[in-house]
Length: 139
Image (cartoon, rainbow, N blue to C red; front, side):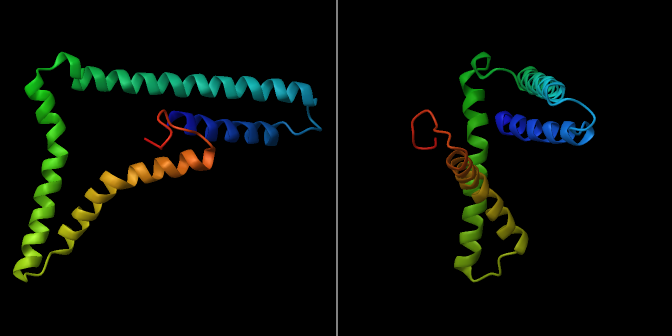
């Protein structure tokens, strides 16, 4: 995720440098040097922010290895339990012939996108960018 952001920001930085310092104002070599330095600085800042965010999450939520097994199981089961509850409620209402509220359909859609959409988007981006995952099948 951060690599995609770095790639995009790097392109933006390059474009800004090219527009602010056109060829008639500065030599090509100097412009390339400035562009390279600006991209390096932007990349370093993005990586620092990413590390800071990760550190914050670890401090706030704690490391899984430092938690009791029961808490790990409870944290891991929240999303699946919510999926079953919303899914079962929708099926029950449909089965009974009761009109299913639009908001419940929307929640079901959000849950399905959560479970399957992230993987599909990741696989699409990996294919588009020519990146192979660790096990070669996008996971």
